[in-house]
Image 1: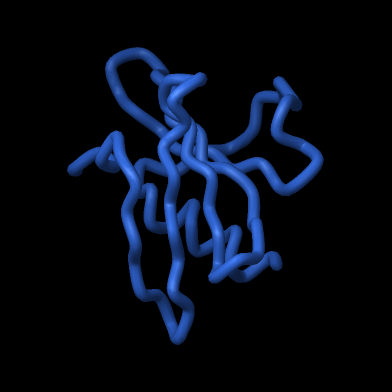
Image 2: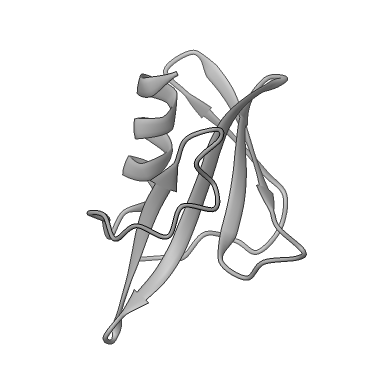
Length: 84
Protein backbone atom coordinates (compact mmCIF):
# COMPACT_ATOMS: atom_id res chain seq x y z
CA UNK A 1 0.00 0.00 0.00
CA UNK A 2 1.37 3.36 -0.94
CA UNK A 3 1.11 6.07 1.66
CA UNK A 4 -0.40 9.42 0.88
CA UNK A 5 2.12 11.97 -0.37
CA UNK A 6 3.25 14.45 2.26
CA UNK A 7 2.22 17.38 0.10
CA UNK A 8 -0.75 19.05 -1.58
CA UNK A 9 -2.63 16.65 -3.90
CA UNK A 10 -5.75 16.85 -6.04
CA UNK A 11 -7.87 13.80 -6.87
CA UNK A 12 -11.07 13.21 -8.82
CA UNK A 13 -13.63 11.00 -7.11
CA UNK A 14 -17.12 10.29 -8.40
CA UNK A 15 -17.61 13.77 -9.87
CA UNK A 16 -15.84 15.54 -6.99
CA UNK A 17 -12.55 17.39 -7.24
CA UNK A 18 -10.90 16.69 -3.90
CA UNK A 19 -7.93 18.56 -2.52
CA UNK A 20 -5.83 16.97 0.20
CA UNK A 21 -3.61 19.41 2.06
CA UNK A 22 -0.84 17.89 4.17
CA UNK A 23 -0.54 19.63 7.52
CA UNK A 24 2.81 21.31 8.08
CA UNK A 25 2.06 21.49 11.82
CA UNK A 26 0.97 17.90 12.51
CA UNK A 27 2.63 14.82 11.03
CA UNK A 28 0.29 12.37 9.36
CA UNK A 29 -2.69 14.74 8.98
CA UNK A 30 -4.39 15.78 5.73
CA UNK A 31 -7.21 18.31 5.43
CA UNK A 32 -9.74 17.24 2.80
CA UNK A 33 -11.72 19.71 0.67
CA UNK A 34 -14.36 19.22 -2.01
CA UNK A 35 -13.85 22.39 -4.00
CA UNK A 36 -13.98 25.09 -1.30
CA UNK A 37 -15.97 22.91 1.13
CA UNK A 38 -13.99 21.53 4.07
CA UNK A 39 -14.89 17.87 4.69
CA UNK A 40 -12.61 17.02 7.63
CA UNK A 41 -9.25 15.34 8.10
CA UNK A 42 -7.59 12.02 7.43
CA UNK A 43 -5.17 10.86 10.13
CA UNK A 44 -2.37 8.37 9.60
CA UNK A 45 -1.79 6.33 12.72
CA UNK A 46 0.70 3.60 13.41
CA UNK A 47 -0.77 0.50 14.98
CA UNK A 48 2.11 -1.87 15.61
CA UNK A 49 3.91 -2.16 12.31
CA UNK A 50 0.90 -1.35 10.14
CA UNK A 51 -0.31 2.06 9.09
CA UNK A 52 -3.98 2.88 9.31
CA UNK A 53 -6.05 5.86 8.30
CA UNK A 54 -8.88 7.31 10.35
CA UNK A 55 -11.15 10.30 9.76
CA UNK A 56 -12.42 13.23 11.78
CA UNK A 57 -15.38 15.30 10.67
CA UNK A 58 -15.38 19.11 10.95
CA UNK A 59 -15.43 20.11 14.62
CA UNK A 60 -14.04 16.73 15.74
CA UNK A 61 -10.43 17.20 14.65
CA UNK A 62 -9.02 17.18 18.20
CA UNK A 63 -11.04 14.17 19.33
CA UNK A 64 -8.59 11.53 20.62
CA UNK A 65 -11.05 8.65 20.50
CA UNK A 66 -9.94 5.29 19.28
CA UNK A 67 -11.94 4.37 16.26
CA UNK A 68 -11.82 1.94 13.42
CA UNK A 69 -9.32 2.71 10.76
CA UNK A 70 -8.71 1.38 7.29
CA UNK A 71 -5.46 0.43 5.61
CA UNK A 72 -6.62 2.30 2.48
CA UNK A 73 -6.49 6.09 2.67
CA UNK A 74 -8.84 6.28 -0.31
CA UNK A 75 -11.57 4.60 1.74
CA UNK A 76 -11.06 7.19 4.49
CA UNK A 77 -11.40 10.03 1.97
CA UNK A 78 -14.46 8.36 0.43
CA UNK A 79 -16.07 8.22 3.88
CA UNK A 80 -15.61 11.99 4.29
CA UNK A 81 -17.16 12.64 0.87
CA UNK A 82 -20.09 10.30 1.48
CA UNK A 83 -20.73 11.78 4.95
CA UNK A 84 -20.74 15.41 3.79
